[in-house]
Amino acid sequence: MFIISVVIIALVLIGGIYFFLRLKEKRVIQDSLQLKLFLVRFPRNTQEGKELKKEINLSEQLFSNLLSFKVPFVFEVAVPYVGK
Image (cartoon, rainbow, N blue to C red; front, top):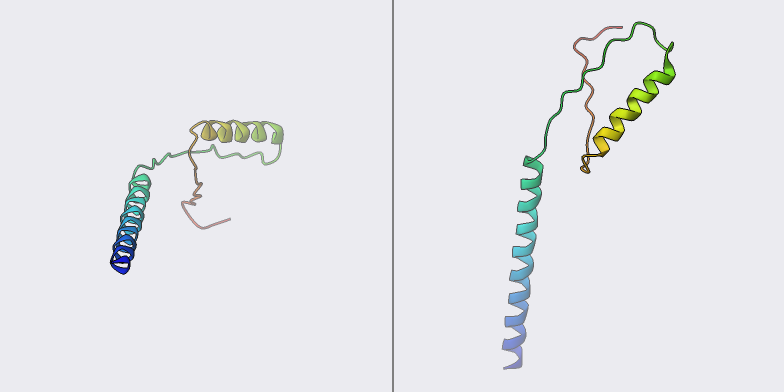
């Protein structure tokens, strides 16, 4: 009788762990589908390095605004053409 109760408890635990992990995986997929895409364009600067302090301040404002969303963010840099 003891062995049967141990087997039943083990099966219940294994089933619980299986459904917990499955629920966790489903939540990860749902969270990834709720991401947002923002297009951020920067002006082309012809005077490189002239106003470094201003550029640093603008970057700081961008980062602080992104951090105010309280969610992780990722940057992707794209170049429209290969050159220079």
